[in-house]
Length: 156
Image 1: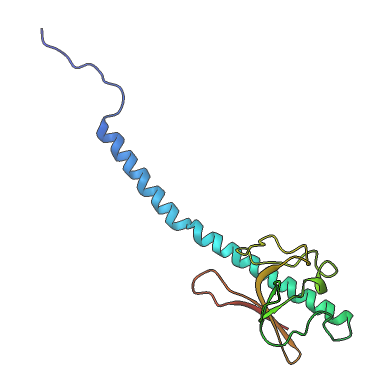
Image 2: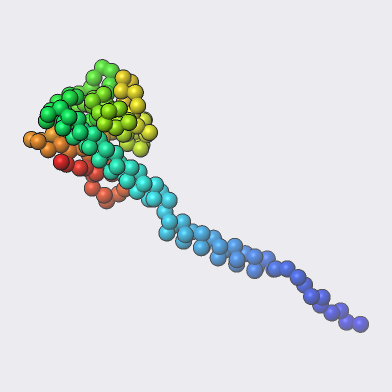
C-alpha cells in the first residue's frame, strides 16, 4: 500500500517570515510618516508661541494699568527673562510685575528647568524667553526647536 499525504493544517516557516517582513516594512513606513520626534518639537513650538503671547499681553496690561510705564525693571535692550542670585548681566526679572495679577504664573520654555512655568517669583528662574523694548514697541521672543523655522517672536 502506498502512503497518502495527510491534509496539513497551519503555515509554513516561509509564509510566516514573509508576513513578518511585510509587517516590518509597513511599521517602518508608518513611523516615518508620523515622525513622533517632529510632532513633539512642533507641539513644544506651539507652546512657545502661546507663552510669548501670554508674556507680551501681561506686560502690556501692566503698562496700561501704570499709565504707559512698566512697573517692573526698565525693558530696553534684549534681555533674558530670568532671575539669578546674584543678578546676572543680560537678565531681567519681570515675574513679580506680571504674576499673579496679569497671569497666574510666568510661562517658561517647555525644555527649561521650569517647564510648567514660574510660580514662586522669589526663587531663581530662567524662562529662556527674551524681552526688549525699542521705542514704544515691545518684543518677546523664543528660539524655535523645529529645524528650518524662524525664531518665535511677537512685537507690539
